[in-house]
Length: 313
Length: 248
Image (cartoon, rainbow over all chains, first blue to last red; front, top):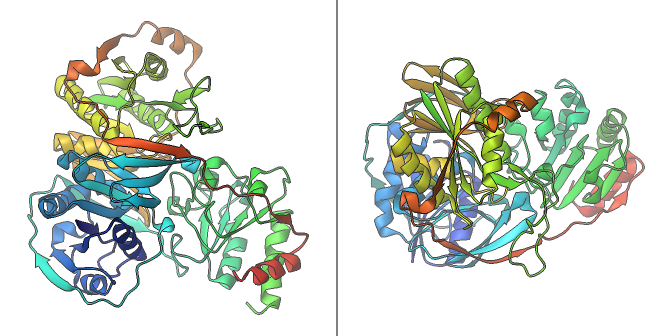
């Protein structure tokens, strides 16, 4: 069996989600190649070639692939699938965008956001916001799969796969990139951070997130939010943790002023240790928290920051 | 411009999900069902486009059992002009849904199809992208805002890093994200009026689409549970606990 893994990257850095996708592919068994499609991807391809267990890296370098828009990715990946039995990508907003197009053209039912591989044709995936785990078996000849990165350990580095340059079909694109506004932060990425501290509706305003950010900076943590806090305009959309936002599974997740709707829990309940700070002792978040602190967050969070400072953080 | 809005009937987002004891699926007997929340956003968007004079006709489609008609009625009460109900008791996977929608698009010839980015039951996030690919149309998924500009649409998309804005030429497929709009509640007079709006009754056979399933559900199980831990009284106690856990 031959498996194609689509690399997650921003034309500069190869993202960890790629390593995790390789782990999922390895669990299916077979030869694993990685496609790096983008613009100016030489370094990214070199990084992908270092992942252990990779047979070869296909590098497709073209200006039309710079933003990895779905239509352009389809044009590159579909012709390659003659040589592969499965294609896997992480379920990031990039992977979610282009993968179903590949599946539809190949006449395959995609298996989305898998969290486990039972066999080369059988997978576990969360449904209903993670309130049920479905085991599904695919009868399609080729498999098109997106994987949930938090569910797989990253593949090691230490390999030296060959890099093969492939040409871009360069079909005229029917969609066009206009602009992007990306959140800039010196903090770690939400999905890759070891510690995440998130604020909810209880924060009351965007300015009040400053108290959370101070704790985040002491711990080297990423800052997240519940949907309520994003909808209220306190923080940008890319902070959202939950069923329809980002799924995180850090070592430590601190939920501040978050009541704990199932849609939020879906995005963080696989964290190793969960701390909840909320003044409402009946908040559902306490039912899943390892450590609960019933307190007014505007007192508790600064106290936590001071205590961390005292401890040398 | 004509706008097509597919809508799905799903377990209401507030209902606690119960896995059947024989692990064959999720218990949907005698529980509240509603329109998929993302589809409500699609309906709202189509109705707003019509109110703004951008859309000339709006059509809702639902594929599902008799009761899917209620979901279509809800969209009609929100302001959609008419409905198409593709009646089936079978579980229809996103690929087959996309194929049926493609057939409907070829009949109705809309300029725009607006779908929810995912259904909150199977969380697949596929149908819109599949439909776009089958039609050879461009797509703008996870829409946060959209503006029509001649024969193209400029769409701001919610992506992992923030917001990405793209331009797609019509006809196109849009999938909606949470912050595109806030869906309205249907007023009583509009609910009454919706009862007189037409719904075409169709079946999957009318579209000649093979809806047999590609995925077999082996089992549906409860997720690994978490239990409530301990309460701490102050920051010193919390920091001590986290240190002993080795997570800070």
